[in-house]
Image 1 (tube, rainbow, N blue to C red):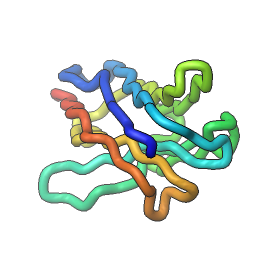
Image 2: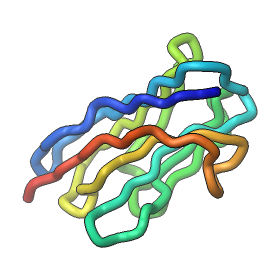
Image 3: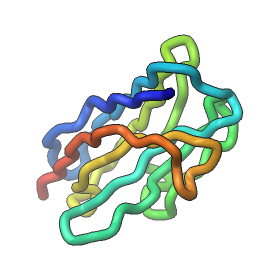
Image 4: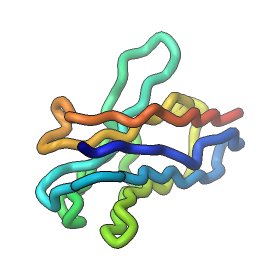
Length: 118
């Protein structure tokens, strides 16, 4: 079964950038989606972005369109989330997830903290 390990979180000032990585171990399918969700304190977990392992099928939440970019590297079995123009409201624990659908995903990573200071 697939296991996901996130990395790349941290503390950044508003307007800055971070890149999150999600490394998958185990068997993946080009037809499956892998993506990112986030959960801020006191709020429900929300969808951020997703991509198929084939590199197609990208989708984004309206709140991150134009600022975040999701990409995949099949050779490394890794999905990236490039986050630019970060805002304090982007502060959350970011979770990588994968499955035939993102509603809901089948597997979750352990999460990585992203904190954006104003």
